Length: 167
Image (cartoon, rainbow, N blue to C red):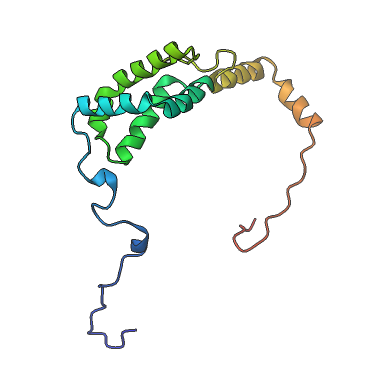
């Protein structure tokens, strides 16, 4: 504590949270990329994707219904974070990676969701559901009253504890 009003406080201490951060240049994405050209990066991807162990994992992901473009985005993001290549190189090689994945899936007989294909044709989007609800409420305004009358909502208990708000 400073007793003398003329004395200046010392501001040499660490910034709060500084111990939780890494120093400048300590992260892989803060270093020069391992592969600087699109050719080098594409060679890296093709070599990794054609390894049997990784290819089987890739096929499992595709069979679950994950679209090819999302798989490519995930691969790119991971590689950028690991310092494999820059984001620019990743954007340039993305179509070639997608084509490689689709050709691998075709040759293995794996069903996949192509780029830009809707994932679930049977399932309505949130927008379609909201529009249908709006139209039904406009046509049948008494439906809301019936729903409120038939549904008994449990009474909520008043929040208690250190961080609760007063009503």
